[in-house]
Structure formats: C-alpha cells, structure tokens
Amino acid sequence: MLAAVAELPQVAPAVHRARDAIDTLLWDRSARSVAEQLATQSRLRGGWASAAIEGAEIPIDSVLHGRIEDSPMGAVNTRAVTLNAELPKLADVFERAPLQAWARMSSLVSAGAVDESLVGRPRPDDQADDPLRLGAVPPAAEAVDRVNALGIVLTEPTAAPALVVAAIAHAELAVVRPFASGSGLVARGTIRLVLA
Image (tube, rainbow, N blue to C red; front, side, top):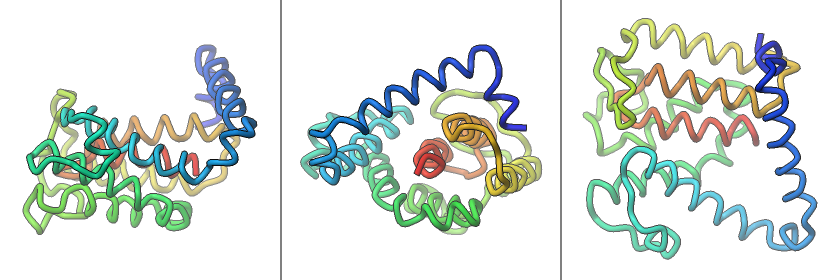
C-alpha cells in the first residue's frame, strides 16, 4: 500500500532528491566529526521549528541557550524541545508499538496544557487544538480507529522508502489530531522516529 504511494509520478523524484541531500550531508567528513553536537542542535532547532508551526514563535537563541521565556509560547517550545530530546529513547518502542510511543509523546507535549485525565490518552470527544486551522476533527471513535490502523501499517514490512512512510504517518496524525493537545508536535516527532 505505502509502496504504491512512493511510485506516484511526483513522489518518486522528490524522494530521490531528498535522499541525495541526506547522503551529501552524511558523507561530509566535517559533519561526521561533530555528529553529537549536530544531533543536539538538530533536536533543539527541530523542537523550536515544530513549536513555531504550532504558532509558538520565540527567538531561536532563547532555545539554543536554554533561556526559554515563561509564557504560553515558551511552554509550547519547552514541550517541543523536551519531546525531541526524548525521541531517541522511544525509537525501539516505536518500532514495535507505535501506539505506546505516541502515548508517551502525547504525555510529554500535553502535560500542563490539558486536564490531567487527557494526558497521553486519545481525545474523548471532538475537541482538539487546531493551530493550523485544519478544520473539524474526525469523531473521536474514528480517530482511534485511524490511529490504530496507522499503528498496524507502521509495524508491517513495506518496500516504501522511509521518507514516504514518515510523510504519510505525519499527515495522518496531523489531520486526525488524536490528542486534545499537541497532536501536531506528536506528528512531527513521528517523522524523526520513522527516519531513525
């Protein structure tokens, strides 16, 4: 199923261009000598960018230097950076049990943002944050079914490139918004887990 998407006329060339760009970076000897620092920078900048997509834009220097402001936007940035720092620890869990990884990711990004009973759990109703103004969410029961189905698809073997799998997983989570808060952060974190 996912492999068929990878063969679409506009998808295959885009995947090849992205893969070539990644290969160029990975073969850069100077980048390899500072791999750990680059990984840390990537997690910080990725968290900052993910929070900015959610509408929580703050200066990047405040994130890079650990001086995130005490504000609602700062809180979203802190959650996004915390999530990105936790992702390497979730890679093995995600490979076997994506639903468990998503629950942990949700707990990291929604703690303090929603009622404690919703932290790390699928939304019980048709209410979810919508910073991208995507519109109405699917009903809660449908969202659970779709996320369960996505979890199954992600644990099955596929010939599809990881970039395609990551894009599909991200899109489904971003549109379904399975959690009352932070589904976009979880969706973007999922990209990193698929590509890990």
